[in-house]
Length: 189
Image 1: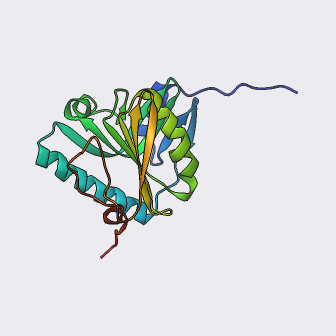
Image 2: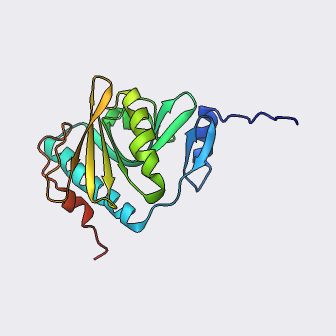
């Protein structure tokens, strides 16, 4: 029996592939992994959080930008797509005309859990983001009705989980007044 080795996709090939495709892909160990399209609830939560964080950034006059669906290179042959992220204006400017896959550290990443992304968001992305040194990572879980805020401490994430009526505590946005219910009560009307 003959084993034929798969050709791994390089990071540079991945960046070019992303630009030419309607489907979003993550790069996992040199292979393209397609992302399942999000639910409407998922999209509305991302949109709401983006508005809230944009307003907080503007209120505090921070030199930051909140972006949806930004890529983050997590290893030589690995790149993830986060639902939301906070980067500096300088980081965003560097990629203004390029694929939005950051090789420099975002300030904050947020993932909104979908049924098929549970393990990826809670386990794989958690370890990859921690190994990069991303200071804060939020996991918004509409199924479990909670938000987990993971803060980097000595190379590992310390997780605090907030339930519906609790105010979320963020070290990146210490003045933010937001509860889990505020995030998850999205509706079309």
